[in-house]
Length: 175
Image (tube, rainbow, N blue to C red; front, side):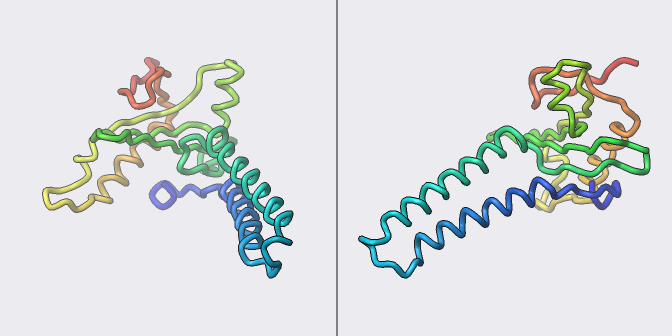
């Protein structure tokens, strides 16, 4: 989407997660390499271990409740005067050949919680076999074309009807 649709990725949340990870690793490094012998460094080990545990927990909460299954968040598309960023989500369940791509506005989670209006999204499911040849080579151009088609539907606001099954077939709204 970044190269084929000229979108810019928003790295804000990723940068926050990287900073938290670096701080957690710093606590772990201090606990491992502090030049204090063992019996005397027990309080230091306790503090460092506790801080590592807390920061790792915060990171996990961010992944569960903020990131969810998003692989990319973009800035608003200036070419269509959009004010909201795009959230790209994917699902590729275990033991299946079907891959699902979903594009939605970044603020859809808040709308869903408030139940103000229907959530606007576009979803497409493909067999991964569509993008590999008989020798096992990936057809990147074909995949880019398919993803661009989903983005064009999103830009034209041809949204799908919400269903409970993210991995299910998409049903387009009737206009």
